[in-house]
Structure formats: C-alpha cells, structure tokens
Image (tube, rainbow, N blue to C red; front, side):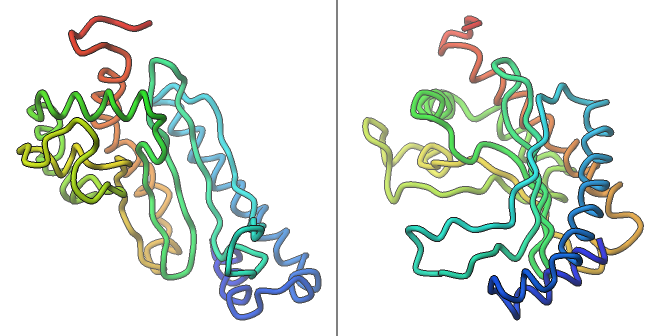
Length: 219
C-alpha cells in the first residue's frame, strides 16, 4: 500500500488535472498495487462467503452538482457484493491517509427493505442486541452507525424503546485503521478478520430481509 499512500498524499496537495496527467505513471503503479491487494482479499473472503462480485471504485469525482470542484477523490475504495436475494449486505474497504477503514452493511436500502428492517426492530431487538453486545463486535465496530431521521419515521412511535435503531436510514459498521496499521504486514489479515466479524450481523439481516413479519420465506 506504500505506493498508493504516497500517491494519495501528493494528490491531496495537487488535486488538479494537470498534475494528475503529469503523474499518471505513479497513479498506474498505485492502482496495480491496490488491485493485487483487493483481489487477494476477495479470494480469501470468497472462501467464507458467497460473493457476487468485486467493484473497484474510480478515482474520478462527479462534480456536476458539487460545490467542491476538485476532480479526484483522495482515497482508493473497493466493494464486495454478496449473492442476492438470499445474502444481503456489502463489504467495503477504503484506503486513505488518515482515514482508512474496513466497513460494511446497508448504505442505501430501498424503501421496501428499510421498512422491513424498521418493522423488525419495532417488534423485537433481542437478536440484534445479541450481535451488537458480542465482544468481537464491540472490539471491532463499537456499534451500528448510519444516518437517521431526526425524530421517528412516519407511522412509528417516537417514544419506542428501540427508536435509535428504528429511525436509522442506514445500518453500517466500520473499523478504522491508522496509516501505520495499513502499511504494516498484518493489514490484510486484520482486514479479513474485520470483514468476517460482520457475518453474524449480515446473516441476521439477510434472514430479516428474506422473510415477512411472520417469518415466512419470501423466496
């Protein structure tokens, strides 16, 4: 990851097309280095899960509707998708000096899935609390994160005991890594362990999203 970090550190200071064009060879080397790492993680993760594919994100920013007109992201990212419809949730790794993390979950569930998740937590939080109180979960992730509505979604009681879960629009987990940790020889192992630690969360959410409120299979 050394070449990737060196390139990103320079890009942050020189985020313009002219500089990028002049340093395209360094970018290509960084991409090559990243692909090796991303593919190795995919291969190892596939041994423990049924993955649908790998998506390496482009470095080019969409600036059409943004006040920030810098043309390039200052991170490299990869996503690993699971085989739908039975397996839900997605894995993600971001490499960025000062802001690297391994994460996963449900970033943008559609309206139907979001309602089903909220209804599940409205009925019971027993299973999700078992998962989030596990020592490994707490060590790696702390808690489930994600954007939320301010009070309560429509038709839900704002005073419900589980309102903090119900009002979320995203259900994601994340473990941050320092630059030193990313550049160490053990980062790939730690990234894999972190991704695997998401499985109880993913397996439970997959069960929720493939059944109705009575527990009957949808597929």
